[in-house]
Length: 358
Image 1 (tube, rainbow, N blue to C red):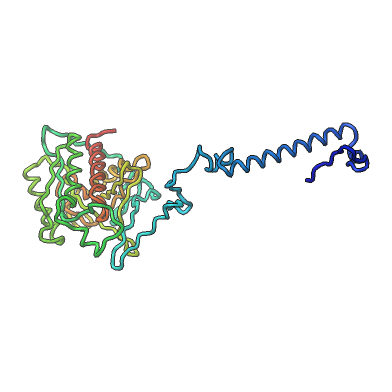
Image 2 (image 1 turned 180 degrees about the horizontal axis):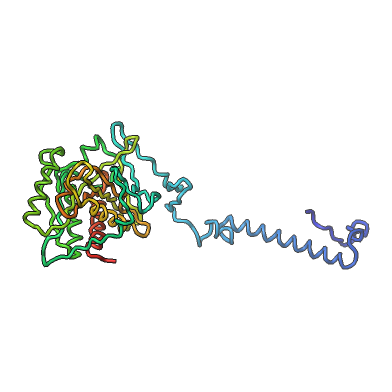
């Protein structure tokens, strides 16, 4: 907009702009007032823009140019892709899996979308999950009598000492070990600790059942359990603690990852044997009830510490004692600490059931 000409000293009347053709009387005053306001606003805007360039003024302060909101040089800002980016810190590059290595994939295997009553059933039986969930499994301790025995049929099954993105060679080379510090014995110790702390007398057998190989390990484990039952007839529950091995269809090794836990935690799966293969095993439904209730307690309030219970045709030596569970804590891709945390949670949840806690 061009400026309004004003009459200067010595200027003829004809040279001035005549507004009478458009505005008359009081409207002339209003027009002049509006034009003056427009000029004032324009001047203010220009001033703000110039101030923002030097870091002063409202624009400078709210866009990071002013001294009040100057960004820290190494501040990282999440991008829409989920990676972390900044002008001085480039995005983290994807980990390259070497040729011949086995990648590790973290997954939550609890499958909450299947519902709390879901049962992975490999048998022709159709047990009522609702009825089994309502059974009581309260065990009465008498003095210092042993109530629980923990054994490890596959004692050399192991975990990682630290989290990895892949196994450098064959997965089996890194998921079995005779090192006590990284084997399932660590998870067994944590489970026994949790149960004993809650007043449930528990023994932990650390003898190697797979010394002669995995094939005959269940025979050796059965002998061990029978020896303990003769020595401690008060034992009511035998837990055979393993670690699982899970692979994806494209060859990745799965690390189980529970949700809604304070620290990274492995997941547990209870395997319940039956009499489907002809074994005399009258207590298998009672074991199934205990396993289903354990899963329910571990997965309250959105947590996913427990995978679905798996009902199998084989008995897995579970016919030897009044109660028996085979627990798979984590996989070979979980760390020792993740497995230990899971075992502690399992121990507390199991203690609640055995003590009849609400």
